[in-house]
Length: 152
Image 1 (cartoon, rainbow, N blue to C red):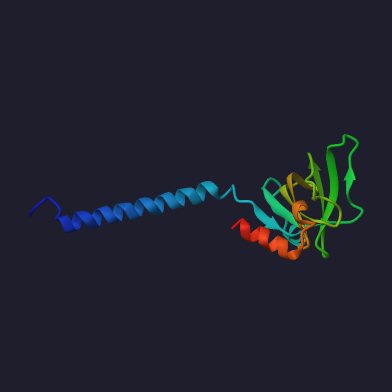
Image 2 (tube, rainbow, N blue to C red):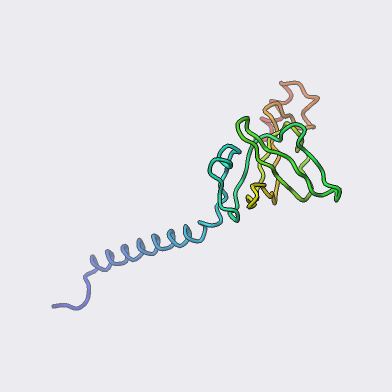
Protein backbone atom coordinates (compact mmCIF):
# COMPACT_ATOMS: atom_id res chain seq x y z
CA UNK A 1 0.00 0.00 0.00
CA UNK A 2 1.10 3.49 -0.81
CA UNK A 3 1.31 5.73 2.31
CA UNK A 4 0.98 8.97 0.35
CA UNK A 5 -2.42 10.35 -0.62
CA UNK A 6 -3.36 10.63 -4.23
CA UNK A 7 -3.73 14.25 -5.48
CA UNK A 8 -7.50 13.78 -5.61
CA UNK A 9 -7.58 12.80 -1.93
CA UNK A 10 -5.19 15.62 -0.97
CA UNK A 11 -7.57 18.19 -2.48
CA UNK A 12 -10.49 16.63 -0.63
CA UNK A 13 -8.61 16.79 2.68
CA UNK A 14 -7.65 20.44 2.03
CA UNK A 15 -11.26 21.38 1.16
CA UNK A 16 -12.56 19.65 4.29
CA UNK A 17 -9.91 21.34 6.45
CA UNK A 18 -10.78 24.78 4.97
CA UNK A 19 -14.49 24.13 5.53
CA UNK A 20 -13.84 23.09 9.14
CA UNK A 21 -11.76 26.25 9.68
CA UNK A 22 -14.58 28.43 8.28
CA UNK A 23 -17.17 26.79 10.51
CA UNK A 24 -14.89 27.16 13.54
CA UNK A 25 -14.29 30.86 12.73
CA UNK A 26 -18.04 31.49 12.35
CA UNK A 27 -18.81 29.75 15.64
CA UNK A 28 -16.05 31.67 17.41
CA UNK A 29 -17.34 35.00 16.05
CA UNK A 30 -20.93 34.17 17.05
CA UNK A 31 -19.83 33.19 20.55
CA UNK A 32 -17.76 36.37 20.95
CA UNK A 33 -20.63 38.61 19.78
CA UNK A 34 -23.46 36.94 21.68
CA UNK A 35 -23.17 39.31 24.63
CA UNK A 36 -22.47 42.34 22.46
CA UNK A 37 -25.80 42.23 20.65
CA UNK A 38 -28.13 45.01 21.69
CA UNK A 39 -31.74 43.90 21.48
CA UNK A 40 -34.59 46.33 20.74
CA UNK A 41 -37.61 46.50 23.06
CA UNK A 42 -40.85 48.45 22.92
CA UNK A 43 -42.23 49.60 26.29
CA UNK A 44 -44.92 46.90 26.16
CA UNK A 45 -42.25 44.20 25.70
CA UNK A 46 -40.02 45.76 28.38
CA UNK A 47 -42.85 45.60 30.93
CA UNK A 48 -44.16 42.15 29.91
CA UNK A 49 -40.80 40.36 29.63
CA UNK A 50 -38.07 42.58 31.11
CA UNK A 51 -34.48 41.77 30.14
CA UNK A 52 -31.87 40.97 32.77
CA UNK A 53 -30.87 44.07 34.71
CA UNK A 54 -27.29 44.15 33.40
CA UNK A 55 -28.07 43.33 29.76
CA UNK A 56 -27.48 46.08 27.17
CA UNK A 57 -30.68 46.74 25.21
CA UNK A 58 -32.41 49.47 23.24
CA UNK A 59 -35.76 50.90 24.28
CA UNK A 60 -37.78 52.64 21.59
CA UNK A 61 -40.97 54.64 21.80
CA UNK A 62 -42.40 58.13 22.20
CA UNK A 63 -41.36 60.62 24.90
CA UNK A 64 -44.60 61.24 26.76
CA UNK A 65 -45.84 64.82 27.00
CA UNK A 66 -45.27 66.37 30.42
CA UNK A 67 -42.76 63.72 31.49
CA UNK A 68 -39.51 65.47 30.57
CA UNK A 69 -37.76 66.77 33.71
CA UNK A 70 -34.22 68.10 34.02
CA UNK A 71 -32.52 67.52 37.38
CA UNK A 72 -30.93 70.44 39.28
CA UNK A 73 -27.46 69.34 38.11
CA UNK A 74 -28.52 70.37 34.57
CA UNK A 75 -27.19 67.18 33.00
CA UNK A 76 -29.52 64.46 34.23
CA UNK A 77 -32.81 64.10 32.37
CA UNK A 78 -35.76 61.98 33.49
CA UNK A 79 -38.63 61.14 31.16
CA UNK A 80 -41.12 58.42 30.32
CA UNK A 81 -41.11 56.40 27.09
CA UNK A 82 -44.46 55.00 26.07
CA UNK A 83 -46.09 53.18 23.19
CA UNK A 84 -49.75 53.73 24.06
CA UNK A 85 -49.97 50.48 26.02
CA UNK A 86 -47.11 50.64 28.53
CA UNK A 87 -44.79 53.24 30.05
CA UNK A 88 -41.13 52.95 31.08
CA UNK A 89 -39.34 55.63 33.16
CA UNK A 90 -35.92 56.55 31.74
CA UNK A 91 -32.94 58.37 33.27
CA UNK A 92 -30.22 59.81 31.06
CA UNK A 93 -27.13 61.74 32.10
CA UNK A 94 -25.55 63.73 29.30
CA UNK A 95 -26.30 66.07 26.44
CA UNK A 96 -29.54 65.27 24.67
CA UNK A 97 -29.81 65.34 20.85
CA UNK A 98 -31.25 68.47 19.19
CA UNK A 99 -34.38 66.65 18.00
CA UNK A 100 -35.10 65.21 21.46
CA UNK A 101 -38.30 66.68 22.94
CA UNK A 102 -41.65 65.66 24.37
CA UNK A 103 -43.87 63.93 21.85
CA UNK A 104 -40.95 62.84 19.67
CA UNK A 105 -39.64 59.37 18.99
CA UNK A 106 -36.56 58.18 20.84
CA UNK A 107 -34.33 55.12 21.02
CA UNK A 108 -32.53 54.86 24.35
CA UNK A 109 -29.51 52.57 24.60
CA UNK A 110 -28.68 51.27 28.06
CA UNK A 111 -29.97 48.77 30.60
CA UNK A 112 -32.88 48.20 32.93
CA UNK A 113 -32.21 48.74 36.62
CA UNK A 114 -33.58 46.52 39.38
CA UNK A 115 -36.31 49.08 40.23
CA UNK A 116 -37.63 48.99 36.62
CA UNK A 117 -36.15 52.34 35.57
CA UNK A 118 -34.23 52.30 32.30
CA UNK A 119 -30.76 53.86 32.64
CA UNK A 120 -29.78 55.20 29.22
CA UNK A 121 -26.16 55.61 28.14
CA UNK A 122 -27.10 57.11 24.77
CA UNK A 123 -30.18 58.70 23.21
CA UNK A 124 -31.07 58.64 19.54
CA UNK A 125 -33.82 61.09 18.62
CA UNK A 126 -36.05 60.17 15.72
CA UNK A 127 -37.66 62.71 13.44
CA UNK A 128 -41.09 62.33 11.88
CA UNK A 129 -41.76 61.67 8.20
CA UNK A 130 -42.27 65.40 7.62
CA UNK A 131 -38.66 66.18 8.53
CA UNK A 132 -36.82 68.45 6.11
CA UNK A 133 -33.17 69.51 6.58
CA UNK A 134 -32.69 73.23 7.27
CA UNK A 135 -30.90 73.67 3.95
CA UNK A 136 -33.94 72.41 2.04
CA UNK A 137 -36.77 74.14 3.96
CA UNK A 138 -36.99 77.11 1.57
CA UNK A 139 -36.75 75.00 -1.60
CA UNK A 140 -39.67 74.03 -3.77
CA UNK A 141 -40.35 70.32 -4.30
CA UNK A 142 -38.81 70.57 -7.79
CA UNK A 143 -35.61 72.18 -6.45
CA UNK A 144 -35.38 69.58 -3.68
CA UNK A 145 -35.69 66.71 -6.20
CA UNK A 146 -32.95 68.27 -8.35
CA UNK A 147 -30.70 68.63 -5.29
CA UNK A 148 -31.24 65.00 -4.33
CA UNK A 149 -30.61 63.80 -7.90
CA UNK A 150 -27.40 65.86 -8.04
CA UNK A 151 -26.02 64.02 -5.00
CA UNK A 152 -26.47 60.55 -6.52
